[in-house]
Structure formats: structure tokens, C-alpha cells
Image (tube, rainbow, N blue to C red; front, side, top):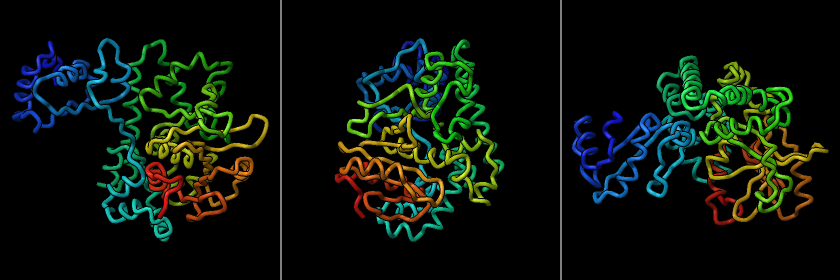
Length: 386
């Protein structure tokens, strides 16, 4: 909508203008009005406050890039007047559904873990496709419509290019080089053994204070997920947070693959996608699945030993250690060490082997991660039941 439509925030005049421009009648409480790309028109965002205070009840949905909305200067966000919903990339289950697999989607959502495991091969094949596309809706739609890998990859590249253009548009010129340095280093940081984000690897002698604002920009725009280290596997994890030591994950698995220019054969032919790059893509999958399902993950590592946990989350007052295995290896030395020290804990291990309970460790195949974590978050008990 043109910016002048919202000048003065006179609701009846805005409604008349929107109706005229769209050629649609607008009936209070019956017509849904969508303001898309509101980051391009800050007055549209501010107008939500006046719609909320209007005597007539209009249903408004505003959508746009968080980079433009959350970080825009010079306009007010209507705090307390709108309900904010944060959208994440499509999950694996949603990808299965989008492909027309309604029955398979329902099966994944059924929580019949042993039965779901019987389709291990089918779901693992679908997971390969998801690892390529990721969860950006435009990418998924293009892949499903045409099954053209190279056209799909081109759309991923255009999305990444769009992000870089947004950087130039919204980020102060003094900060832009640092944001680009952080953004362009994500794939190499995650390919390291410990995945810890180190500033010295992008600029020798750098300190966190120098890049902190750049990282905050990317995090607030939901382009990266910051997973802090915790110094102790104990409840509440926030008490033991070490915010200066962290991992950084991009928001989407498919975009990470595109950023790293991953050979498509490693996904669809060799099947080595998860194993290569020190398991970077396996951890990325679990990180974004955890966050999309309402968890706030940490990771745990001891500086003076090999002991580490890829993720640690808390749920219903309890702490859950998580280990991510990129292949069929199910040896979990770090998890077992932590479980031996803390007899009240139960752990999750995500690995390519089938679903099974092993002592106090539940092995969950990656294709079941979305279903398992959603069930865990919703379950009234500590552990989802079939």
C-alpha cells in the first residue's frame, strides 16, 4: 500500500483507500486485511495501534521481514496492541505434508514411535530431500512443483542475495562490514569439531565487544540462532549461561547448504551429507527443530576435557541432555558420563539408527526429531508415551 494511505492514521479513510485499491468490500469482523511487506511502509505497522483502538473490529494481519520491522528506526511498534506470531522455516513434518503426504504426516504426528520406525527407509529418503530444500516456503514450493534441483538451488541463492540487500538497506554503514563477516563465516564455524563461534577465525585479534552488535542484529532479525554454553547441566540452565561462549546457526538447513555450496551428490547419491563437515548439518537440523518447537537450547562443554553435550534443554522443570550423532555411531561417552553423575536425568540421542530405549538414553532417528520434540513439549509427563 502507498505510504500516503496511512498518513494521519484515520481508520475510516484507510479502509476506504484499501477498499478502493483492492476493489474489495471490507466488512468489520468478517474481512481479513493483510498488510504484507510492512517493513517497506513503517506507517502501516504503526497504524495497527489505531486499528486496535477503533470502535469497529477489523481483523488485520501484518507480515514482513524482521530485519526491517524489528530494527526499523523512526517509527513505533504497537506494543500491547497486536499479537505477535513468529514464523519459522517449515519443519520436516510440514515438508512431508506439503509434498502431499497427508497420511505420512498424520503417521508422524501419531506418536506411535515403534510403528513410525518401520518406515525408516521411506522417511530417511524424504529427510534427504528436506536437507536439500530446507524449510523456506518458496524453495519448498518450487521443488515440489518442478523437482528441479538446480532451479530450486537458484531460488535459495536469490533468497540469500535478498538478505544481503536488506543488510545494505537497514544496517548502518559503519556496522555493515562486521555483519557481513559474521554472516559469511557461519558455514566454516559450524564445520569445526566443537562448532564454537570464534571471532579470531574471521578477524585476527578480534574481541566479542567489537562484533557483539553485529551478532545481535542477525539474531534479532531471526537470521541466526545463538546457542550459549552452560557451565553446569543443572536446573535452571539460565543460571549457568555463558553468553560470551556460543554457537551460531543460520535459520534454515537448506540455506546453510546453499551458503556452503554443498555438492548435490553428497545429499542424494553418496548419502554422506550428515557425516561430512563434522556433522554440521545434523546439528543444524536439530538446532532449528528444537527452537521451532519452543525449546531454548544451550550446549555444554568443559574447557579442560573432551566432555561435551551438543545441546541441553529444560522442560517441565527438568534438564535433558542431547547428543547428535551424524552417522550410525551410537556411542555416547559424554552423555553417559553426565548421566552417571546425575542419576535423575534422561537423555536423547539423535542418530541414524532406529528408535529404541537404551538404559536412560532414548535413540531417536533424525526424521522423528520434529514429532518427538513436539510430543515432549506438549506431554504432561517427562517423556512422550506412544
